[in-house]
Amino acid sequence: MSVLNEIKKILGKAGISKRDIISHLAIDNPVIFEAGANNGDDTVDWAKKLPNAQIYCFEPIPRLFEVLQDRLSGFNNVQCFPLGFSNSAGKVEMYISARDGDESSNPSSSSILKPDQHVEFHPRISFDQRIEIEVDTIDQWAKRQGVDRIDLMWLDMQGAEHLALQGAEEMLSRVKLIYSEVSFKQMFEGTPLFDEYTGILNSFGFNLIAVDRRWKDMGNALYQRR
Image (cartoon, rainbow, N blue to C red; front, side, top):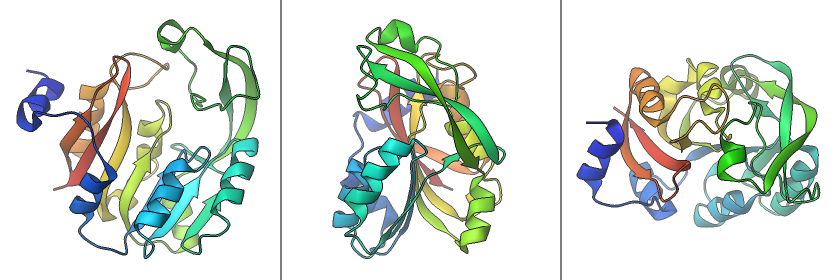
């Protein structure tokens, strides 16, 4: 039986709400690390729901980062960084998504990985533009910032989540929960599919406690440190 089928059997539900996550955090002043913050919708929601939290959010696409920074400017508990994450620091090429050829559309499917089956599942999304972005490792960033724990790691990186985890081997021992986008189909080249990805997190000491697979291609999963 696959990990996915087993967890569906255990949970008997799909969907992971912020209320669910907060109940597992069990503290009102968590440290939240959000990679792939996009235009800040989730960041704003977290900042309102947990005003005592310290939130670090990251968005490497310049025009989205400007929107993010502007939206979060009124929240004292949020810091924004124009960064992506991978298994090494430096500059990498990012494939920028556009809907129906409109490059001004929200590039929410952009990834540092080359699109694969994404173009089959979402034919209206194209990846004609590429830009160079700055990436860091989570371990190096945390050391520079003096961050010694992360209660919730929120990863929405379009298939590159495993690379960010490879650069966080030291920090992961001080992470309580990981909420991550997961892939059920090979949407981007080199992305480990759900079972393999869950195995990677198991090896880092995390158990799968919930999965949301309302879509055929990708979903979200919540992992908790054992």
